[in-house]
Length: 232
Image (cartoon, rainbow, N blue to C red; front, side):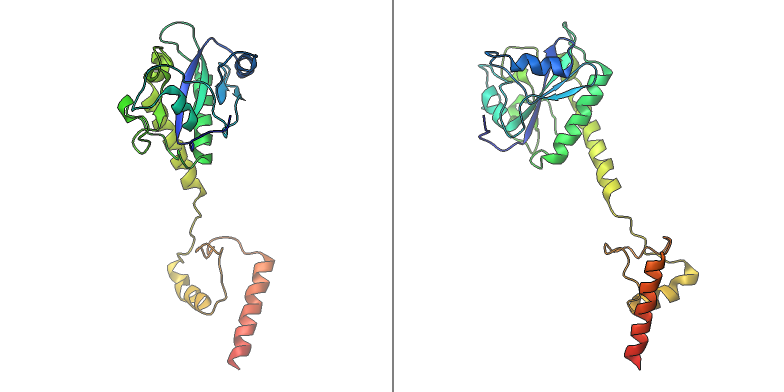
């Protein structure tokens, strides 16, 4: 079913059982189940898509409200993730499942600008105030332990790790500006730049310390020739 709200939230749930992602997806796909999730993370680190992100999943039902919102309303705006867990308190998950969950959350944040980064304060009164908290839990909308104390108590750490990876990826994608000449080369670089012999990488970097190809050398010679012709 298409969403009635833009995506701006994530909700982590636990499946009470150490299933693979395929087992979880097959379970939710059963006719008459009346339950689903956008993603399932298996105990072995597998990840399965159950309901496409453009559609709401039926994951966070219940009769309680948090921040004036029901679980059904939460699902309209949240990407919901079921994670395989143990069958008893605190419903722990495997290291492989945790790593897969964090990797999935990083991908979700990168592709959904309405989420961007994860924010968590553990306050159900902040549900819907996504600029302060964009992570919610099922227990706020229903009399359930979900996502279990293991995952619930790690929400702050999960958010911090996801955000740290997002920061590292953003930093790695920034162009490296290579425009500072050595002292002995500064006069020549200034002359070449002033006379438009060097254009650099087009992003502000002159590529001063990068190897020069024959193609680049020919272009520089041509520019030098044209500049001299203009002066005659």
